[in-house]
Image 1 (cartoon, one colour):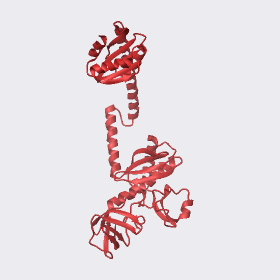
Image 2 (tube, helix red, strand yellow):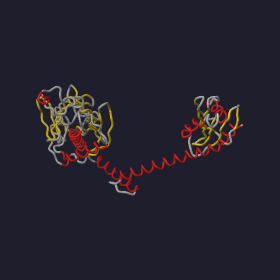
Image 3 (cartoon, helix red, strand yellow):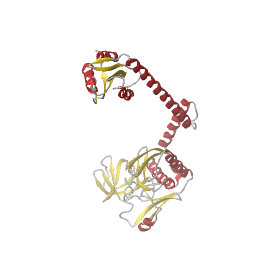
Image 4 (cartoon, one colour):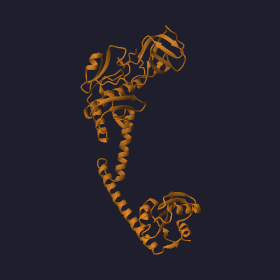
Length: 396
């Protein structure tokens, strides 16, 4: 058993070596935290040799060293825990409880789905029927940081298992808090006074003010009914806030407004762009109409059918498809329009007597590229010729 959860601020100790198996060491007692419940193992050294992993096993807490040690069973050795990483884990783990406490206040049908501490970010999985949109995410961050600012005391104690299970306010997750409910008649409960209470075997700070700034980074959906919220504490949180602030200031400067007015300005610009795109679409439609009207005066007869063939500028094949379908059989038996949209394309519509697919096959056989369609509508692209050459070919 490790004393780390009970005495998280202790980072050095002396102990007797109970067992040595290569680089795996078991001590008479330890203050190293063994990986568990989403919290990584402590880092540090045993008699100066780096500890690369700490795991709970049947024979006790096993410390895996970077190299084979000189000490043997029965020797007294010193343990030194990496204080910076221990502190990061303490702050991160407590922050996850504070975030869950924030969720208690605004999320419906709340359940605890998981937790993990990473190098740069921490995640909490919420089981909730609430849609955690941007507004909810911002409110979770605000409530979390408010609880940090309020300097709420954090305590932990062992409770009888039955008593803990009967208390509805205690959050449990038997998967991530492995070992909390097994092998003992008691349950370790972490209490953030008046804010959150949960069964937990991790290391924690004694007051929320020790957490420092918390910045929510992102959200995702790892499973049905689950929302994963990722956040940062300490330097990564500060760095993210700075980067987001600079991005907002830069965007506001580009838009010629202030950060607070940026949403309204973006909405105005979006409306303006939509209006311009509508005007452009209308102009293109008029251009297509005018071009087709001119081409209709110069139809040709080919294979016993009247063909409307020509080039068209400023539009792509997808923008022409509906118009070509409408014209086929009305203006001419076959309508074939060529243009450029990166590469040369051809769009063909027929009344059914001529096969549009055959026309496209004929053109691609002559000029390369590819395409296809139905007997009444087909299109091809990637042609190795200018639109005028394609039109000249079809007018022969």
